[in-house]
Length: 127
Image (cartoon, rainbow, N blue to C red; front, side):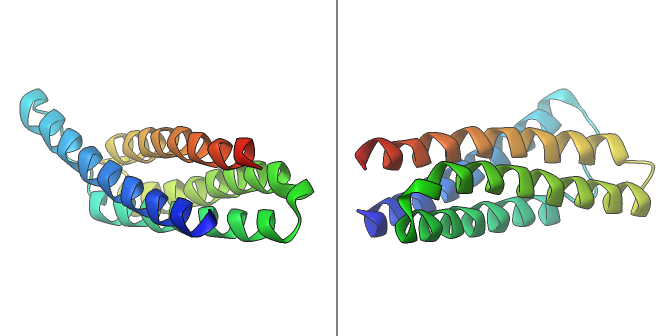
């Protein structure tokens, strides 16, 4: 169950990342908005952070199922703190384009968190 859920999650996360990149490119092209200066770094950070937190949460949940919900909530909070730190660094490095960078990170964080929570609750319901 966990291996198939993990494979499905990686596939869905990759597809969601591609869809997000295409949506981002479309918004930039059609809306004439300024491009975030660190968009590639942001997409990579969010993708790797999500995959890592998902597998750590699954590992903790398989070791002790009573801590599974706590692990889910901790992973959400820790990723938010990681992305906040990334926001601070990016704002420090590029003050001129801080707003597009911050908006991109926050939108991607919320989109991925909703997706990850839905996938993890499928596993919780199955147990």
